[in-house]
Image (tube, rainbow, N blue to C red; front, side, top):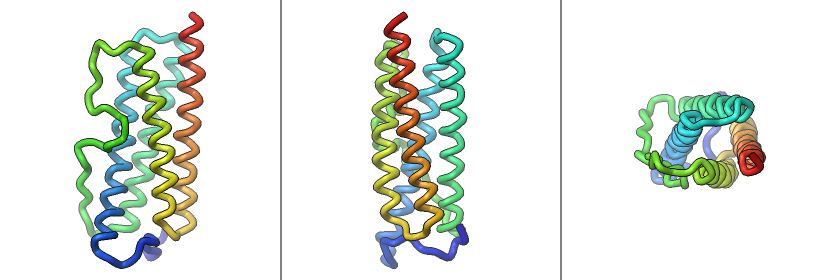
Length: 158
């Protein structure tokens, strides 16, 4: 990412602000997803499930870093403020009484929405490397969904 390529949505200041906001939403979504997984880690989980969830936390933190890198490349002079909430289904605060099953379902919904969001965001960029990164992140979210689905099924069997 050379910082010279511009987002495809053009030259309008309003469109640039909107893209900056969308990237801020993406960062916030990754922070929220990692928080959901940290909540899962506070639960009594089988060791193999715990290891997978720990890996998901790490991956979401890596995704957050990817978005900060994109922001830095396209808006090196700007300070990006993050929204309080991504607006995706990631709850900012998770009720302590939430069941383990509901927490898994919340995480799965979050992953589906993030995948769709990143696919849509990919359409806003012309630069191949950014598009590839966003496509990779969308695919990663899909993979996270599948991991969660599989782990939830295993927990239901126990």
